Image (cartoon, rainbow over all chains, first blue to last red; front, side, top):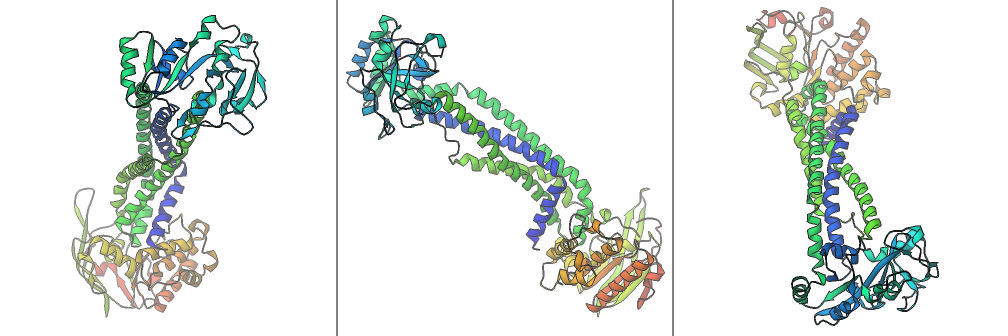
Length: 404
Length: 227
């Protein structure tokens, strides 16, 4: 048995001897680390994912109102539309120099709670939702015609509702599902959109005329759009922002999308702070538990340490036994943190995907993992210092109890 | 040739009343290589303290202790630890086996501190003391006599030059005590190890070539009771 093996044997024995308290300490560390990692990474991941999920657009033009509401409605298919724009507005911006692409959107109906979004088929033919990547339709399907009652179903919706090419459905009026508000029109599914991990997956795409002329809709719907998705060329955004937001009073030009979303996430900072402080608090409790476990064990292990010293173990060896025990507890806690994080982020990403269609990647490597791991181990070691100092100072003679 | 040489050794403790109590006051004491020395003394007269001083577990107030030509009193803490691991085997009255470890592990842990090539084979040694079939037993699974035999094996595993035995039969019945003493002497004789044993029981040391009386070795008979 080498010195290292002896050290390991004594450390593990210490942990085994106080298995329950050690486990509680490790669990507290795991909760704290997991909470910290989860808060940090989910927020960061969500922010990145949302920013990247602007589906390749730079701006949204919509009714006068909040930029954020406009973006959430047009890009993420969340919240209600702030109002409608005249079709003419779409024509104007489409033909504005500096605008590379413009696609009208019309909303107002759903199927089983999933939104129907009316647009031009060219969105799927021409637009790159990610640099160099256009929308793909799964094998056996095709794009809807602009004049037919046909639908292209987002991948997430198709999986959730079990929809397939050839299926027919009747839309419901409004953005939330109400059984009594069923429209008479029947739509046929002609294609399933390949998964993109963007909000496009969680809606049902139909021709814009389908929404505009849907039976039961007010007549002004036929000449209006809910929003226009815009891709710009060069620095046209400044001029358009000036034109719509500063000089005009008919429409809002939400640009740039990323900055508006960043402002939104900044509003959530307080929540992040609260979770962060909870994590610190749980972390401190974990350190105190380690300290208490080791301190209590010291009273019983003094004799064992005195025996070891009498056999030739050095003070440093004994000190390392206590620090090693603390290290083992914190290592188990640090590994547990990742487990807690994976569970937390798994639930969070499932929830975010369900609500927004945005796909988070909680499993991607990040240096934060390494830092958190090191900090946890370091804190564990620091908690072990006071009992290790006690072990260092164990009086051999006194604890061997001379008997003659 | 002398293995242990002690000169002007003195150790005092502070009594609860605040007085300084001299526990060990040894003018001269030597032990030769391969010598067997038994020392009798009353309980609480300072014999254990004397052994602790020799082993470097305690530091003397003054005086010199030389083991194998090295002055223990002037050594650093870590050098004393290493000396204890390599040159000294200790047998305690209460055995002091590590309860969470098997017989074999008790020996292996002791070996890890000395970390030198001149060590006995733990399997052979346990077999030699009659515990070859119980190497994976924990101390609490063994009888008192068997525990003592593990303690003897542990004291000899690093092939020390000096074995210090502190009332090694104090917890044993007469039959086991006799067997245990026989085994200890046999093992030390085989390995030419110096044996220094202290006991309050005259019968334990009656077969030793050299017999000493603690009251004559140490001038300080000022302390009675537990030390």
